[in-house]
Length: 64
Ligand SMILES: [Zn+2]
Image (cartoon, rainbow, N blue to C red; front, side, top):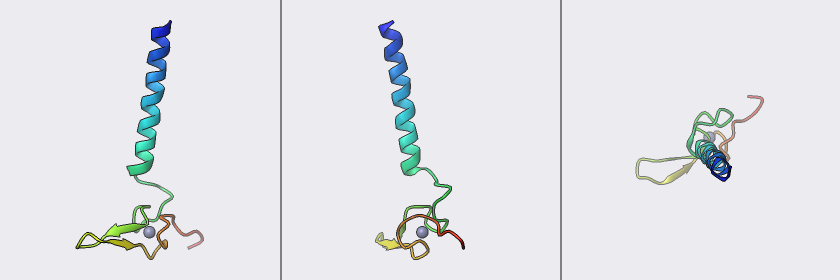
């Protein structure tokens, strides 16, 4: 019984971690199309460039 509980907790933990990773690194459907929801992109020399489409929020503008 304890073994079953440990397996169940393990599966829940793995699902939670995978979901969190997908949220952090995966594509965001509601995010800005131009910067893929990051709010910035890397320029040619590696510097951060704030996305002027969403103003750095990473969220797509509504009503446009
Ligand atoms: Zn953007």
